[in-house]
Amino acid sequence: MLARLQQALTLGLIALAATWALYFAQAGQPLKAVVGALLIALGYVLFLAFEFILLACVQEHAPTAHPTARQLLGAWWGEVMTAPRVFCWRQPFRARVEPDRLQDAAGRRGVVFVHGFFCNRAFWNPWMSRLRTEGVPFIAVSLEPVFGSISEYVPVIDAAVARLEAATGRAPVIVAHSMGGLAVREWLHCVERAHLRAHHIVTIGTPHHGTWIARWGRTVNGTEMRLKSPLVTRLAEAGTAQRHALFTCFYGNCDNIVFPASTAMLAGANNRHLPGVAHVQMAFQETVFDEVWRMLRGPAPDAPTVPAFRFKGDEA
Image 1 (cartoon, one colour):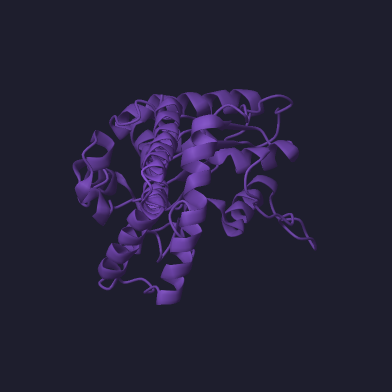
Image 2: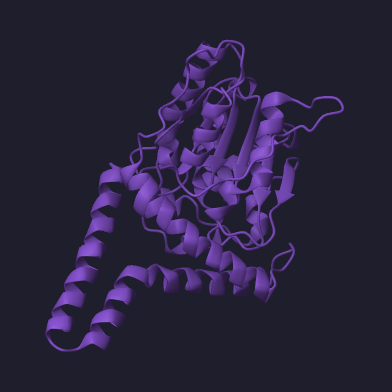
C-alpha cells in the first residue's frame, strides 16, 4: 500500500515539475520555468530546513548536548541527500528487492527489522543486503495499516519474531527505527513473555516519550506519538529499568523528527548519542550497524568485534 502511494507521489511530482517547465518554456519565460520546476522537485529541502529550525529552538530547553550551527547544517544536508533515496526510490520501487532470509538459519541468531512512520520494509535494504552477504537470517516487516494505531502492529511483529524463532531456534535481535520502536514496546506490553523472546532491542531515533513535532500529526499513529499521549503514557507506566535494560537506544541532538533529544532515551537502557546526525540518516550510521553486529556475533578475543563496513548508497 505504501509503495503504491509513494510511487504515485514521486511520479506525480516529476510530472508536475516537467509540465510546469514545459509550459513556461513554451511561453517564453525560461527563468520561471526553471525556478518553478526546481521548487516543485526540491521543495522538500525547504521543508527539512524548517524542521531543523524548530529543532534548534526546542533543543535549547533540552538537557542533552545542544547542536552547533555546523552540526545542524551538516545534518540538514545529510537528510537532503538521504531522504530522496529512501522515499522516492527505495521504498516505492525496491520494496521486494531484498526478500526475508530464512534458509540455512538453524542455530544462527537473526534480526527482525521494524521501520518507522510512512516507511516500509525497503527502508532496511542496505542492512539486508549486508546481512545476506554475511549469511545472517532476517525478517523485515511492513507495518499496515500505514496510518493506523501503533497497537495494530503488534500481531505483525509477533508473527515475524515467531517465524525467525522457528527458523533459527534462537531469540532474535530486534532493530527498530522511529515509530517502530514504540510498536516493539507495545508488543512487549501486550504479548505475554515477549521480553523472553528478544535477545536485545535496538531503537534508533524512537520517540519513547513522544516528540514535540507530533503536535501537528493528524493520523492515528501520528497523534499517538505526541508528548504525553495516552499510548506513550501507558508504555511509560508499564516500563521498568529492568525491562529497559533489554534496550540500546540511539538518539541524536540533530534528530529533526524526534526532539527534544531526551525523548528518544529510556531510563535503564544503554542510551547512545549520535551527534550531528538527522533522523533518517541515523539508521545508516556505522556505529549502529557495529553495535548490532556485536550482538549477533559476540566479541572475539584479541580480534576486532566488527567487520570493516561502510553503508553505500543503494544497490543497483
